[in-house]
Length: 357
Image (tube, rainbow, N blue to C red; front, side, top):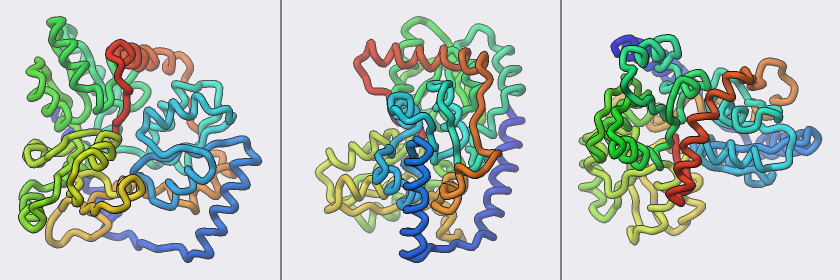
């Protein structure tokens, strides 16, 4: 679908401009401690819990853990918020994650540091164009990745995370079903190659994972031949072919603990290094190369929208009037249908569903 490609290219240009002109700043230890104290006090006063994605900054992830929240993938963030007694969820992530939390827990208040923190997969799959695309193929089951808007989820037959995508595709193929896959073309291609399912794909991509380069990883592997390569399936096929393990964020963390290697080359957002190093402090983790010569350090495997979730923005999360997540109740009910279908299917398989980006 060319319209998605055109929009995605515009997104890439806008984000690259932001990265090229951003002035990275660091808080002093005193500033960080002061902001953390402010946020902790407000969380307690507001009966709120902080849930943070693996791709947020180490300071934000540490704060979530220190305050009794959680650090995880987006679906687990939503489930944790659903089960936690707090009346308010503060979601440090991107907008679709806040929407998923609201869909699973419509009675709670869901706040985010900023609603401008979005995702190229979400932006690259607008509901009007996607719905028209689905209408052109009424004989196919619509399977969408969790990294999509509530409206796109509501249009789907299935919602999947990367950890269960292969199982769902195999199940549908065994039933003789053909599939529309959206929005990530690289994950869809990986699923198609692994399962042999009849899949047509929406043309979307993650701006972080799409930038990993097979040549750079191969060169790095030559320098560190003992390193295992861990790759997220949103990466291009040439990168996946070099992987010792392909998996979701949670699966990458698990692989780093299970594999005997002492060194790992990691092809996903560098925010995950906080948890990798926490879980395996004696192991070495090396970020996989992305854009090559001329790229700024900031542009290498770091989502610019995740970077909007910083202590400064969290400190003001309760004082703004433009950062609450709302999902139309009827839309939320429709989006819950394919989400529940995935969760029920996982329960039948006795699988823990984790791992979208």
